Image (cartoon, rainbow, N blue to C red; front, side, top):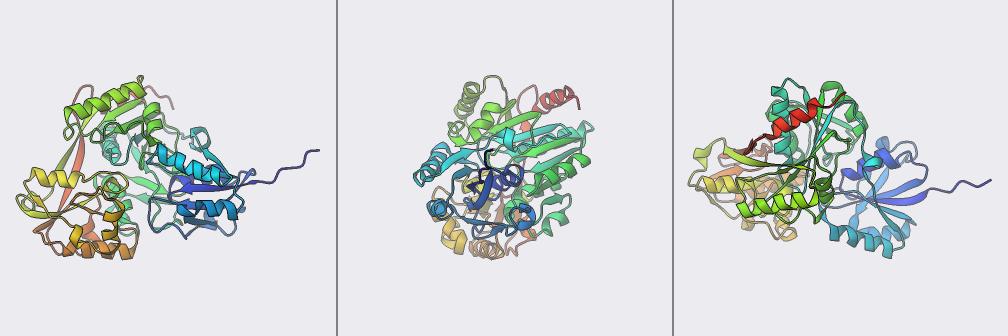
Length: 444
């Protein structure tokens, strides 16, 4: 009789999101693997923490430690790692293969998990809104669809890709009011995403255990809107997949993982921001869409900004605070806040000489950043540094391009204006009509 083989030691490369989901649905109860560690990248202050035992199950009574990704060779050696699994998003194909080379050189095998091993099946229709890159406008399109579905008499519930940066011990998070968002003790990046849904009267779920989230969300709504993070794939098996392309970064549709997979698997490809990009940039995106996924429907959309208190900004010297991920690892020099300032004839003040602590260090880490301040607030200490940096900049007003209402969590000494942005159809048929027609064909 053949003896049972011992489980293979494996290590999960992650960024506090996809990695935890993949562990929960694939590794936690898998007898063939023993996860010895996670590594962390992209998001600060995640390494040297522990994925809690309460989420790990009985095979991991001490939880699972999280280490910096830079320690990968040592971890493979010290823990006898057989297999390394790459489980995060919005990185170049070259970056993925660089890590594969590091793993293989240290003696381990290297793997990517696919949809059949990681996607959960829902009992409600799932519309997934994904991106080719971070900052393409996924959440704007998701909110546009939520409004359209409500207008059509449906009960959509948004489920956001995980961002458990404020803590790993809340498996299910539900946000429906301003108080839910402001009282949750979450990071600025989390606020940036949840705030937008709440502002338009929607409900959004997130957390760390998407089996539980799925049960709660599909009990509350009749359609699930997957609001993707970075350019990651959905955790729920989609009935309709929409991938958003950014014409401000043409040529990147097939350079990033897993964004290219999202482009190739989409039912609908949305070329967003057509009101901002040049016609040549838009057409480059359209051609890339046709080349990578000729079966997909291509839709053009605009992303239109508005300022709630334009009189504070028009013609003034202002500090522009932008959405953090878009202008850091998303690679944008600036974003919607800077565009809104330019349209109002404002003069952005360069915040770099005034940024303190980790906010100042972000400019060295992301040298592409322009004369804007990234809204970074992953810890109480970093929030204080963000507040100090904002208040140190000599300006007439602060223009918040971040969706997070920083005026409610920081003491800002100057007048504050906020930028909102909405998706707009620019051609017929409208995206909402295409989606509603597709949903009508689904039988559940």
